[in-house]
Length: 95
Image (cartoon, rainbow, N blue to C red; front, top):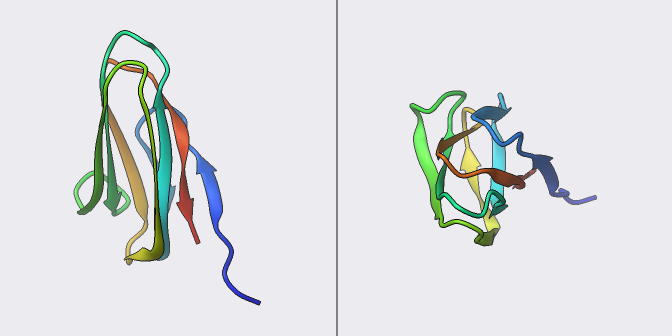
């Protein structure tokens, strides 16, 4: 049986999604406040100090989904930092 992707919901705030090695496969994000931008940074880490895997600038009311078919090996875990005054919803895809 092969590996299966798992979507992990984002809380809308900075959070650690996984605290062990995993394969990061992508994200789906949306700014829901409608008036302010937000930046979502995704790290191979358990804090915002590790290797940067993705950095996504979302303008007010926009969305973006990206999938990496081969995946990106995250050796430490996956941590998400959300900055700006926008409101973000979405999920990350990991194995």
